[in-house]
Image (cartoon, rainbow, N blue to C red; front, side, top):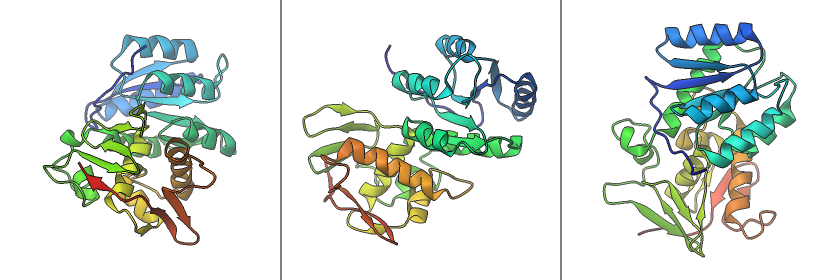
Length: 259
């Protein structure tokens, strides 16, 4: 199946809520619909896949603890075929599941019990983050405004024989293979190429990449960088492009040039 590329809108998005608890489904469906969202509810993995195949979904809220499917397996399957944002719902103590889910491409998470208001904030943050630059060009937090690197003539940059297209969000390897990036990975890489050779703290990276708009999660940055290293580095255990500055943050070592 071809990748499904979407342009979700914060104000008019179609949310797929996947949870086996009918009370949770009804509560979230009513809460989100009251705030202008279209909502489809699914009680299990098969129902989720059926709704996904019908198309038109902008974001998926996925409970990892489903009776008929492994939620992490579903998240992996979704990410293999689509860039649709995923917000995981996990148990309060399921830190390992959260980390694995983020590594597999989920965009954010909430832990039960959570308030609908918290989930709504995360939905808005993720949808704002994944909109294409053309949709957000007038906003201060758009890619071109937030990283101080983008101008009207800039479409591509190169580093260490890699090519990053900031308009199409396409990354080409030195041997010209297209390497897929999740929304969070792209935002973080765009932040790095805007400040090569400078030490950036986790807080700076969070603000520049907008990985989380409402709260700071240092571990989220660490997971995203781990994933980027696996894609960019010849040896992720001895990184040469994204280096760690202990106690300070990270530094993008590769020279960056405009194309």
